Length: 232
Image 1 (cartoon, rainbow, N blue to C red):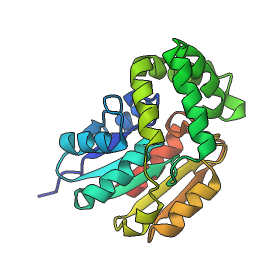
Image 2 (cartoon, helix red, strand yellow; image 1 turned 120 degrees about the vertical axis):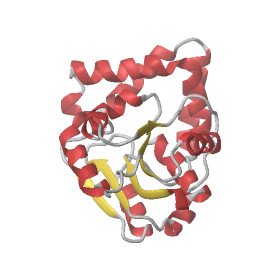
Image 3 (cartoon, rainbow, N blue to C red; image 1 turned 90 degrees about the horizontal axis):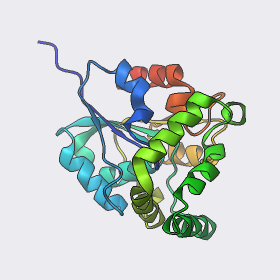
């Protein structure tokens, strides 16, 4: 008897919904797929607890951006439940004071009823320069932000701002790990990826050319190929 493929849990980044994983949902349609809820909690711990409560007993975890912060917490709590780990467009350190100050500015704007301004300000850093006028990508980003909504965005910001530094726990990650980021990502850097790859024993690092922060939408074929090769 052939064993069923391991289920996959997808954890999205801030202002992103399961639409972000649409190309992967199609490519992995033969597997059990779960999309973690990233809108209901205002702490990373709460998001991780919710993910574990709704996920299969054992699963592969593909996590993007803020979802990566959740993945680090999952690996601290229940490493035995994760077979393989994909960390995409994410980073391990906590916020710097400058980053926290910028996020506090976002909170003030949203609380003043200016959520749309925050979304528009963030759009340029999500896409590589050559795709910033792409109507399909911009439309998808705006749609996911609208689906997330202002209140959930506030919860996500507070969760990100209070997240712990995950670097001390990277060496304890003992499952196969794939680290992926776009070379033109406007949020995370090559140094962030190198840091994780050096700390996680046996981790494989893939930097995707012609790609920004929204890797699954900008380079869906490349991401699908990487995931299929890694997850099986």
